[in-house]
Image: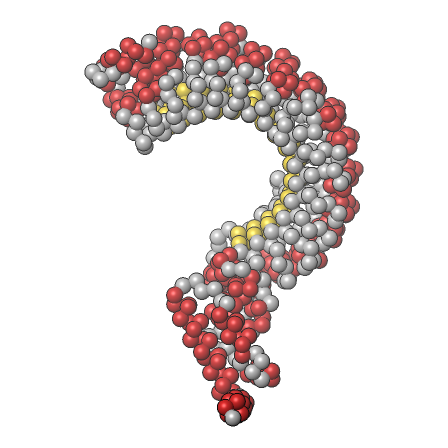
Length: 588
């Protein structure tokens, strides 16, 4: 069919094949592979300038033909095609030549023209409508020709799944359910077959499809296959999964030791289901990420089950999300004790999601910090929205922060209104810390007094030695903008920039040189000239950020040397006399 368009392409007039000047302008850009047009949407009502509004007078065969020849388009959204089968067939036939489009989004019910859909170079496809009967059949036929497809999101029927399993590059599948509809038993059985047969599948997104316990039991049979989702991701969030469903999942994961990430947040299971899951995961060497957030029925019994995973020598879990789960003082101690011997966890999240939630308070945080003081692997900790945390809890972090084994680099405390007292507590706790680089919080309630505590933390300008003993690792403080302490904030930002650009040793030197224009050498005279080479070396090793500072370092080095000579003239003369006598003796 395309050869007919090839013969007429040079002579066809765009105004003869489009319904309006708007579409004519868009088609002109498509025809000429305009590099500014990388995304194209086809609609029935106008929204933006770069959209093709399909009307009766538009020749979709020519539209498909020019899309097929275009070399710049990357993404195509088909939100409307008319019910005329012939026009749809011509469109898909024309665009099958295209090699540049990698993503296609189909947003409306199409007709049997889907059966001729041939998109061999598309790598990502989303179909946002429910398909049944003959339309699902047409779509499944066209889907088989998308041989480069890597990610698919849309409906799943037995026939669609059969087509998906034939695609050699398929790595990700997401199931879409519209209108609050729950996934059917037939669809669950189809997904089970997908898990059994799609050996390259890495990501299965079933979030919010209404699996429930019965659906998960069916799915678990496919997950039990050893090759299912190897090194992959399974998202089961928001599915009303209870203890029975989780127990079925736990049994399947005992056979499948290759899943890398499991998301179970916002379900309905409690301690019983979690204990079964923990028993299975304690022996799993593959899982790296686990989220059980917002399963509010979990108590300290469930927290203890999680601790068994963390204490297992076989577990390699790196990221654990326990958001919106109540961690009381006893739960904090349970987690802390487990983390004191854990050697794999890198990220821990204990966020709350609403103002009425409580995950961890001061007592729980103190117990957790005690255990963390013996941990040398955790790098990220998120305590955001735990409004029960006060300055008392923040101060208890001192034991952890000042521990020589502390490796924490990122601490997040958003939506905790701790004020000046909290700022003092954090600054106090972070003294002597050598690991934390990023500290995120809101500044509500913090005045210039609180900001001065942070400034003193990273640059105690009372003396050169005070600066040297300051924190030179912290490179980011995130806060909401308000007027309180703006002058102090500017100084803090300057010091943080120095910490970010320099290693700790050079950051200390730079701050000292920046704030003390005239260094006092008198305290060093007690060691006579022994300190002079060290002072010279100290200046020589400072990293200069610009040419002006290079000159400043050179002048300051000469000034410091001069102060030594001026401060100890008798000693200098004695040294020179000794040198001259030795030279004369050698000449004799």
